[in-house]
Structures are given as structure tokens and as C-alpha cells.
Amino acid sequence: MTVLTPPGTAAVPDGSHTAAALAHLHEVRGAFRARRRKSAAMALYVVALAGAGWGLPLLVHAARADRHRPPAGTAAADLLTSLPPAAAVVCLLVPLLLARGAVWRGPVVVDLATVTWLLPTPVARAAVLLPRLASAATLAGLVGAATGAVAGLLLAATGAATWPAAAGAGAWAGAATTLTGTAAGVLVERHDRLMARHGARLFGTAWAVTALFAAGAAAAALRGTRPPSWLGPFFLWSGPWGWAAQPLAAATGTGAPAWWAGALLSAGFTTAALLLARREAPHIGRAALRLRATAATRVGTALSALELRQARAGIPALRERGSRPVLRLPAPRRTWLLMPWRDATGLLRAPGRLGWAAVWAAAAPALTALAPHTGGTTQRCVVAGGLVAAYLAAAQLVEPARLDSDDPRRSAHLPRTPGALALWHAVVPGLLLAVLLAAGGAAALAAGRLHPPAVAALLATAPALVGAALIGAYRGSVPTSVLVGVQTAMGNTGPVQTVVWYVRGPLVALLLTGPAVARTLCGGTYGPWHLAWQLLLGAGCLEWARRTARRLHRG
Image: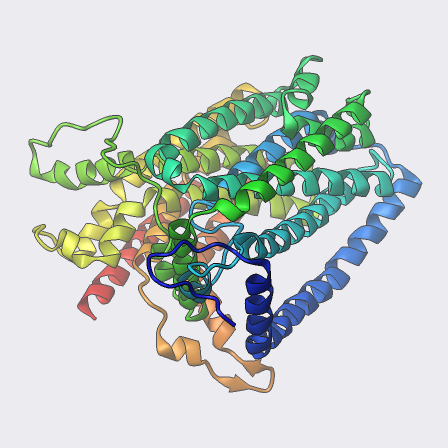
């Protein structure tokens, strides 16, 4: 079988050569495919087991809710009222996230051996790349349909719709959204050079549009009365994201009388996007495929070793050549301003982190505002979700500390000990988190969803959450003793110890500060003792972060 052409001659793909080469590779890589099938079967088994344990009770609950049709409570009514704009925003956000992930992940991903040895030969690229696209699109469609069906079942549990209609409409919205995102990812791969030159600007514009839509949806959800009648139709007819959400809005009775037209438009747009992706996939450059194959190998190796920091470092950043920060801070004239200036400058050079911090900080009061309208386990979950969102905002803001932890040479010239540097790294994130939480709390306060003591309790969590984020920034690599664990009658404790080691900082902060916030949100008093406890907890977390940084750099 002659596959390679002599040097200097044109490589013309030949059908017989392609079929013979792929048949040979299929035979040679049989053992590798068998291992992959076993891994996929194991993953499918775990998903099926989790679905049987959690999905079936949810289905039974939704069916009972459909039979009895209880009147929707205040929280459920507010959720259904804001469903059309919220569903449209989610259907816009998911394809944008998939397209952004395609900058380094693909959906069309091949291994390094294929990029290095197979693609340079006169083998038809479509025969190699299109099966990868088909697999990625199938997986994305199944995951999107399953996620949308679960969302529909949750909405059916409020008694707003029959569970088959809600689950079917949710599956439609999820599948159309993820398939559109997969097609967008193929286009990002195909135009990899364009993304290298103008990707940051293009994605920045897309994020700005998404933020405007999200702000409109949040304003509709925070209103004390019913939102304007034109707002729902505007979101549902604003583009493909709204077309995909129309069957779900119609199934729950929240609008979209001509939902069938939106469904037809969504089906046509998704089909056209997939056909375009199929046409463009064989033209993806080898440099783009090599970048994604290398990133996938590095990230996979780091994750298998449970080195999350190295996995994150293996993801290439999207930065335009010659790009400069929008705002430059003047150099400080006082020595004590050096560290705050340095951290603020670092965050300005990564505006995406500031944006995500603002999103999570806005989600925190929005979630906690639901606590007074719920009870029992749901109430505790809502409060925990709000505090987790606030912690994620703090984790975005401590990125300069994380960089100093990864590379001690960045701060070696500074006349401060590692422990003191960790405390200085808390100044800018603490102030920014307090400002962002105050802005979100003020919006919820103006909408009548939160009362002043609840906003004060949420603001007082900032020191503890920033300290917990700094503990994570300076945690370093997982100790071998934690990975090895101890063999017990219930199995090895290594996996549990590893998870606890990773989340120990935020877990302690959330468990100790959560009761005071939950009590205040549910109408309890918020006195000086509560404030003193939260501030004392914040001081303890900051001291823990200082000791962790000193121990890391000493070792």
C-alpha cells in the first residue's frame, strides 16, 4: 500500500488509499479502542446509576405534581414569570461557552499521532475529521437533551405543566442549543488564525451582548410586580436562542402562542449550522488541530494526577498580539500601595475575571433573596447556593495571589515574607467583593426582595470568603499521603481525602458563616454578635491563608 508521496510532489487524496489506510489503522488500534469502550461503558454505568438514584424520584415527583396540580407558591410563580427571558439567556449563554471553549478544546479533536503522521499523508481529511465531528455532535445533543429534560421536569414539579410536555420541550431546547454551540465551535476551529488576531475582541462583544440580555432578565426577575408584557416576546423572538426556548415557554403557559413557528425556525437554523460545520470541518488546519491535541493531552495528564492547577495552566489563553489593558493605573508613590496597585493592575489585564466576579456577585443576592419564600431543605440549598456564588466571585478576584503561588519568582524581589504577601493579596479582592455584593444587595433591596439586615449579613461574609479563596490559591500540590489514603473496610480513603483537601478552606468558611446568614434572611435579628462572629471568622481564615502561604514557600 503506497500512502506517502515522494518529496516535492502534490499529495492528492485517493479513495482507495484512504480506505486502506483507515482500515489498517482500525485493525492496529483495536486494543486502544477496546480500552476506550471500557472507559466509556464505566462512565455510562456511573451516569445510569446516578440517574436511577436521583432521576427516577424526580420523575415520580413531577408526575405527582402533574396529577394533583397544586397552586404555585410565590417563588414558583416568580420563576414562571421570569422563565421566557431566563430561558432565552441560557440558550444564548451555552453556545457562547461552547464556542469559547473551542478556542482550545475543539469539538473536532484528534490525537497527536493522527496530527503528526496521518494528516500529512494523501488521505482524505473528511474521512478522518467528520467522524470526530459526528461523535462530538451526538454527545453534545444527548447531554443537552438530558439536561433540558431535567429542567423541564423541575418546572413540571411546580404544577405549571404536564411532565411529558415540559420534559419534551426542555429536551428540544437543550439539544438545539448544544448542537448550535457545537457548530459554532467548528467555525472557531476552522478560523483559528482569525481568532488569534481578533478573538478577544469578538468574544468581548459577544459577552457584552449576553450581559445586556442577562441584565434585562435579572431586572424582570427582581421586579416586585409582573414584568412588562412585551419583554417575554422580545426575548423569545430576538434570535435562535429565543426560538429554541419557545416550546418550553409554551409548555409552561408563560407565553409563545406561535411556538410552532419558533420551533420550525430553531430546527432550520440548527440544521443549517450543522451542515455548515460539516462543510468546514475538513478544512481545519493542522496547526489548530495540533494545538487542541496538545492541550487535551496536557490537561488530561494533569487531571489524572489530580493536579488541577497544572490542568488550568495547560489551557492556552486567548490574547491578541499587542493588546493593552483598557485602563492603566498610575504608579504608586507610597510603598504600602505597591501590592494593591500590583493586584489591581493584574485584574485589569484579565477583564474576563472581573466580569465573572460581577456575575457571581450578582447571583449571590439573587439566590439568597429566594430564601424567605422557601423552607426546609430547599431553603438551606438556596442559602448555600448564594454563599457558593459569593465564594466563586472571591475566587475570581484572587488570581494575582494564585499567580504568585505558582511562580514564587514573581514576588521574590518584594521586601515581604510569603505570609505577609498573602495578607496583602486580600486587600483588593476584599474591597472589590464588598462593592460588588453591596451593588447586588442594593438592587435586591430596591426591588423589595431583601431587607437591610440580610444585606449586611451578606456583606459581612466578604472577609471569610476572600480568606477561603486565598487558602485555595496557596494550597500547592496534593500531598502524597493524601493521595494514598488509608485502606478501610469501606474502601480506600484517598479520593475522599483529596476532595476534602481541595475544598477545606471554602467548606469551613461556608459551614461556619452560613447559619448566621440563613437566620437573618428568614426574618431573624442581626445583631452585633453576629457581625463580630463573621468578622472573627474572616480573621481566622486570613490567618489560615497566611500560614498556608508560609508553609508552601518554606517547603
